Image (cartoon, rainbow, N blue to C red; front, top):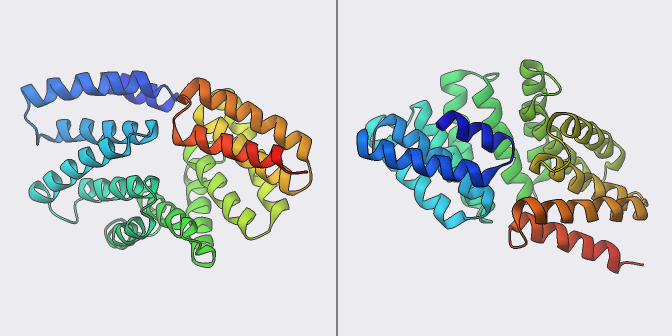
Length: 263
């Protein structure tokens, strides 16, 4: 059942993923115990699903339980503990707790580098997460070199079309956009959107994120009509996939309102 849930999550079907994960969690807790590694793994996955759905309080409660159990059972430097720490930091970022997230990500990155080396995928992901927290805090100068390292390292390992590479491509483009390098940002965003459309289809959350990012760059470059049309697609898609109240839907609506309200 966990594999089915992970497949549903990867496809952007978070409702089905959550249902499967909740069922698996009940079974594992009853048959294996609350602190069994398989129970904690499902709890971790469910926390990420809740975060994606915008249930940040529920996500944080679950991941904090996982982290406390991992600290007791496996210790601070165990890879599973570091993963739980990184996931907690991601939930903090989603809740706008960027300073707390940044501090946790820095600790995770130090540990990943010491235990796995500079070019391990988990180290590169830790770089990516820290770069995004720094970016959210407005520290673009420190965020950019980390994001570039994470992107290039991930691309070398997985290739251009891997979902993780594409996500980091979008992240780097966002930093370039806010540094005023609009042409470079647009080039990366065009690549990301093309890959997402080909790999996931128009209604996948990753595709909608790529469109959301590109529309803002197009608008900034003067392509107002194209930008508004694309952002309208984002709003419609997110409403259908995520619902009206999801933070990503609200963000897309606000962006569209800003575009259409400008003359």
